[in-house]
Length: 239
Image 1 (tube, rainbow, N blue to C red):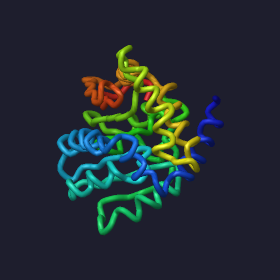
Image 2 (cartoon, helix red, strand yellow; image 1 turned 30 degrees about the vertical axis):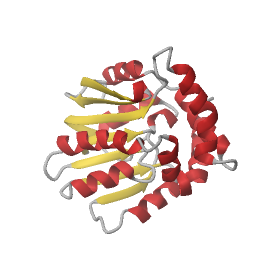
Image 3 (cartoon, rainbow, N blue to C red; image 1 turned 45 degrees about the vertical axis):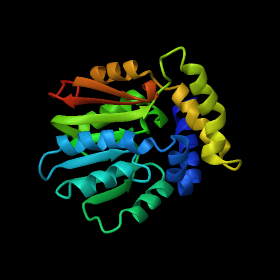
């Protein structure tokens, strides 16, 4: 699938499933998505400096952005997503939070100058971009030297014993459990995007190739979910 086709398909899917997206995530993850995302927000809350700035790329309905904003009222959080319908849900969920900005944009061409944020994160969104390396490069570009870049996403478990059960559940049960009869094709795509995604090890390697250092990986659910993070240590000549 070429870049334009993938971008158009992802836009269509998330515009369509936005109203029930959060509830579907609870169902298909058996409630574990909250603890997975907490792993990411804990890392961000600890890493962000006083009165810092965070960019949440592919922010969707705002789970990460809003949690960090509530826990760190001194931090200005910016959420960016390509699907206006997802951002509309995030806007409704923000309540009275004043330290959150939500904007429509493309993860492959972030509309900010170099070194604009203290940290950048993407949660369950990198695999849906049309160019993983470019998306990471853009995140690294807009983060200040020393800043944290994080990616939490879904992966095919590496264990040969686990893979058949994973594929049975996520390939056949999850699309119906998440999307019902009406949106089962959209949730089937989410499974297919995970199958086509990098392995956790390959993503960590891509972090290093992008120019991020001190790369760490934390896995959950037998490797079906993982957090990969690294730091922008210094500018590269190509930047």
